Structures are given as structure tokens and as C-alpha cells.
Image 1 (cartoon, helix red, strand yellow):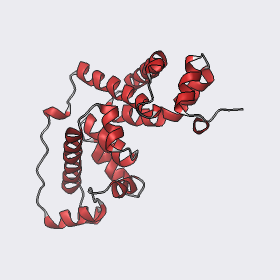
Image 2: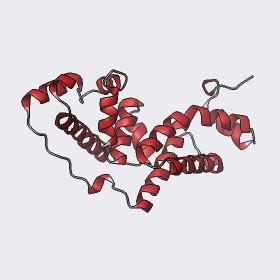
Image 3: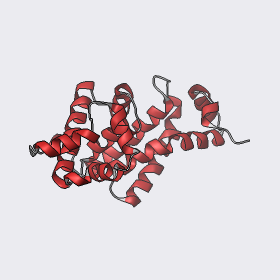
Image 4: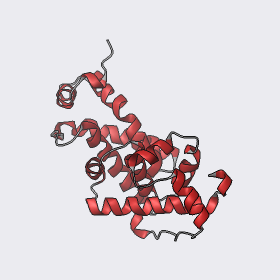
Length: 203
């Protein structure tokens, strides 16, 4: 019988993997690969590099599973390994990271501002998560693809994966103030891009 992730507690998963039960490690991969993929696709532009990094992530998970102490969810711990692996890749490749960025100013078109605010209320998690699932999802994805990799990842984790600040802080190692600042700047950049690139009838 196939083992399902929701049938196992994190402690049991860790114990059984450390005891050499490879099918349970396969359960862990299945239950976390969506979250890992979201991080990979937002942070790593090259498909071949993503494939190599994903293998590296799960190799690290397997090697260090004994170090997991249940201080957070197991999926969060795996995601933190994925994030740090990707971040190290960005640093090695000398790609743009948030500290190097400046956010474009709002163009100041009151009509477009009003229309954008009608379908993008960046003040709530639910509204932007709904936008990901709406007919405007392609518009949003196009805008997110223009963000720096870390910004795009934070927006995705918070609004699409609907993770808490605490979970994202655990994954990224960012202090709460920095995380909130990056999210604010990412949302502002999203709105600016949409206002500059879409006509009223498109909104």
C-alpha cells in the first residue's frame, strides 16, 4: 500500500528515513516537491541548473535528516534547504539580489491606479492568492517574472503558498522587518509594472 504524507507525522518520517526506509523518503519528496519547485522556478532561470540543484537539495535533505529537530515543520525545513541552495547559486553566479535594487516610482496615473487597486489589493493575503487563481493569473505571473529572484520567491511563498511570516523567516533566514520590507517593495514593483504595461481595458 502506498504511504501518504498526511498519514505520517514529521517525527515518524524522520525516524523511518534514518532507519533506512527509502519509500518514506519518497513520501517526503512527493509532499515537498511542489514547494521546492516554486522556489526553484522563481530563483533559478536555467532549467538544467534547476534540475541539478533539485537533486542537490534532496541529497542534502537525505544526508542531514538526522539533524532535523522538529523546531518547525519538516516541509519548512526542506524549503529552507532549497532556498539556501538557490541563494548560494545566485551569489556564485553574481546575479541580482534585492539589496542591489531600486523600485521604480509609481507613474501616478490616477485612473490606472484605481483600476489596479480594484483587482490587486496587496494589503491582504487572500486577495492576491485569489488573483493567482483568476483569469488574471497570467498577468500576475508575467509581472512576477520581472521581479528579482528573491522578491519573486517571497511573493510566491506568502501569497500563493500562503505561508506565514514565521514560516518564510524560517525558510529564508530573513528577520521579520527585512521580510516585510522586501514584500512591500515587491508588491510596489508588481503594481508599477502592471500600471505601466496594461491598458484600462486589460484590467
